Length: 275
Image (cartoon, rainbow, N blue to C red):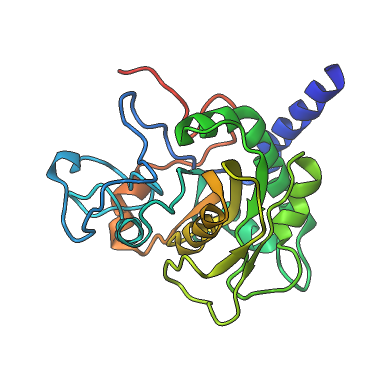
């Protein structure tokens, strides 16, 4: 409809003009298979020589050591969570510490005074991305369009709804699957029992949102909770894949990144022809 088209155009205009620049991951070359949720159990300490040229982790797109297909954290999750991990993890952008976009990912949810400008930019980015690239995400995850929405809870166990859930849920016509941290289960490692998930229909497909992926332990723990109550597929969409510029392992990844405005024509899992 014309009115809806104009609304999306306004969102994209905001992202191209007033929103902070992004650092989008490039699509992988054609023929690069997605990392399956039920991947073979791999020892994160053993390199894979055949994949030595991979510039980033095949799961989270974060820095990897030379000769490895996955970062240490994602390799470790594969050892602990076989069958319970996300079918796809798709970052919209890298969130490089010290950049304006990374700052917005904190400012939008400040408890004392959330920044309205950051909230508007975050919401516009997420909605535009899902409209333009949701189909890419579902294809990459090998799932139908999602039937449920969930947001990774904060590690602090705050009782009120997550700020990202409050922002986006009025705009998405998906029933919400609540997630809550279990008392005493706070931590930084993958824990399939960290979160309690509400009931969902068997074989449901879930869109799981997170604002920042650091190690991925929280998002993968939330995925495990969803799969244990019946979800068949879980696709994780992350606003920002955190990168610490002081991390020596991130050097080669950072040199390949340049700031750019939101591009509706491409994403981290957008199909692209072989060279």
